Image 1 (cartoon, rainbow, N blue to C red):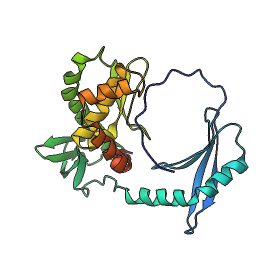
Image 2: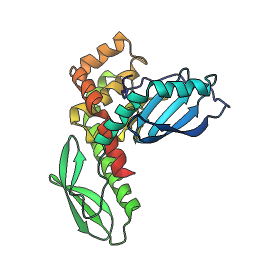
Image 3: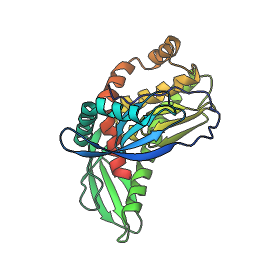
Image 4: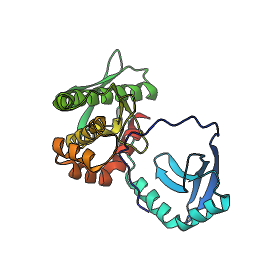
Length: 264
């Protein structure tokens, strides 16, 4: 049962579903003695039973007609897989930002030296190849995380602004706008109205990986699917796309874990 993050193609808008999801926690004892709380969600939109693991925890999704017994059986059958995924998650955990103690920050596939200074406001800026975190004496964790997130968003938009003009002339239109947000499983999406969403974690990746996701979503302005014609457009603009796809399969989980640990 492979665990993969995916780049999602745009989908047609769905009609609102009045049936709410039902949620509860189910305790699960793993073979190694660990107790795990599984979030069990009955989703009327789900078509099959699904088990997923992320930095937010373990989730078991049940279609509306699936029985609780079937869900328990599915958990039991995938107990070994779940244990392995939780071990991998521990391996990719990243230390959170600690004022005056953290001395490095990830950015664009590298770790930058981090210097702390006391000032009249809280902000993070680049000084050559060093990140300088200026804070007030009263700044708490919320202010630090907000400043760090603002810094990453500014860096990501600078990259997008540098790459986008290269591709726009050969596209039928430009994206309506670009949003940067923390996404649990996707790396990007393109809404029917032309709004592009990109995972903020991409700014931590090597530049080629980030640019590939941008190109991936831009090509959905031409083809709203993943047909051979679509991949031909990607290939024309970014011949190295297969290498970057493989990079995400190997390092994607750690990338997302880094961002969550730093800004939340």
